[in-house]
Image 1 (cartoon, rainbow, N blue to C red):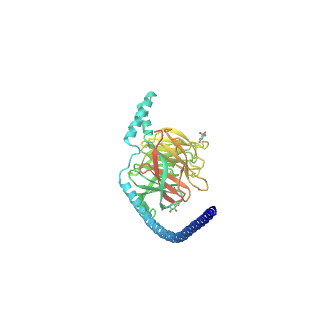
Image 2 (image 1 turned 45 degrees about the vertical axis):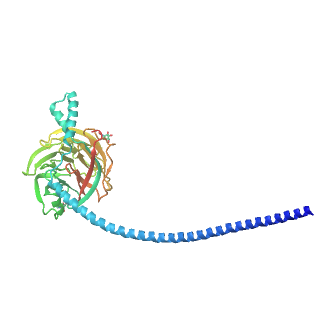
Length: 400
Ligand SMILES: *[C@@H]1O[C@H](CO)[C@@H](O)[C@H](O)[C@H]1NC(C)=O
Ligand SMILES: *[C@@H]1O[C@H](CO)[C@@H](O)[C@H](O)[C@H]1NC(C)=O
């Protein structure tokens, strides 16, 4: 009897244990499910919140974009106003520039160093003192053009071809209308010219002989121009603008009237004056495809030195001299963008590879002439009847 009781009791215990166990399991599972449900509910709430936040954000960005668009419009209007003001300031600066004294091209320290360098070299070669002086003058300047900073169209007067330039010393402006003539127009300043009604308010200067082509230069109160005597002879004439008389003339070495620039055939030779001296660009003969350069004494018109620039005349429209470096500007017969594509430095300090390929801003047509003003570091261009000023940026020559 006793063992049976034990078996019964132990079975009952086992049953109760099993029941407890399953109850526990059920409780556990229920709790897990509740927890999952809770979390899902939470996710749902969060999702809704995110969704509404997204919508709000979208609305906000739309508003911001709209606001920006309005700001942009207003900024544009402001910019327009500012550019008009800049224009005015630039004009004022032109005026101030005309009132202040001109700057020299190189500073004194540069000059001393360069003269010493040349001095040593020349002494080694046992040259005369005079030549030493001359060569040091040629190498005075150590700047090269690095870019075209801006362009300004001042006016449109006269015929499609012509020349305008400004004497850096007197700040007077001279207009050569057409490709030849015996009269030029003088204005007291760039401002006077840009405010004038054509050539009526200018002083007309009648020259004793005709100027030919677009190669004239004005420097320090003197006008230098090319005069064709006969079909084969050409002269450089130095004319004193103050006294109104010819102070010097000289022939220059050409065999015939070959045009210097293929795209501006009226120009037989081109003069450039600066504080380095007087430069003459010319074509010695028809068979010579390249531009020649002569350095002249601005006082006596003596030729001091001659170089072959190795820059072709073909497709050239103009050229100018900056610090002893010739920059030749090329274009195509159907006027496209003018560019400086050949440079020649009398001191061999600038090589073609070093000089940047300079493109002129796209403008109306082709340049009839480009005249460099050394004190202002800007070019006076005549482009299909428009008078244009290009401001240049400069850098030091690499080898200097
Ligand atoms: C410039 O020359 C053209 C003809 O070549 C002439 O029609 C025009 O009147 C001249 N302008 C001035 C300002 O002399
Ligand atoms: C002209 O210059 C080119 C280089 O641009 C050169 O190859 C050619 O020999 C030169 N011609 C003469 C006749 O000097």
